[in-house]
Image 1 (cartoon, rainbow, N blue to C red):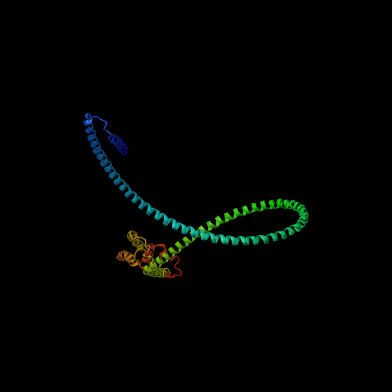
Image 2: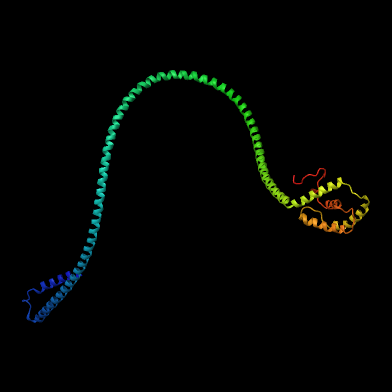
Length: 338
């Protein structure tokens, strides 16, 4: 647009120069042409003014754009300023950190320099020591030669001792194998003994358990015996009395032996009744068992046989008693409590 305006200005300038030419030499018949030229000049002036206004408007628009761009640049500059400020602060902090590190490194450098001086002094002392050691090495070389001679002698001695030790090692190896075999045999015997010991301990624990059971049942038997003893005290007393009566009858024979046939008849008559009474084993009270026999004996008394006395009744009663309630030998009569 600016180039077009410049071209238009250039053309207008050329037209103005052309219009300023001297027209006096023209004839009078050319007057309308001159007027036409004047009108054209006026039109061109108007056109130039309108072009200038358009140019000014465009420049105003451009100025507004420039102002907007300037505002944006101002904002960007503010942002950049803040960013630069932050970066400057960071650089300041880093500078302080670097300065601190430099101070620390300077201090460490000073310490290293001091340590270097100390090392130099130590190096000097070591150099002096090395010179002394060199002299000692020279003396040691002489000693080394002497030691080499002794080492050769010791080497020969070592070979002799080695041969001797090999022979002893062979002997010791044989003895070791023998001892190892004996140790293995002893170990097997010990294991067998250990197993036997475990079996004995297991058997002992079983015996201990059996002992506990035996003691338990012994105590139970003692309790049962005491209960039975207290329960059968009356029966044993009756049996003791009957045994005494039997002993008395055995020592005193019957007065009338002619009544034996009648007694046999009584016993035959009472035998079925006595057979119905079970054997006495201590399971029922003695008084009740004795009352059963007394009922049978009362029937025998009704027969009126003189020989049916207490001795016969005692023998009948003893025939129905268990073996443990009959004394094995009535002479002498033993107390059942003992």
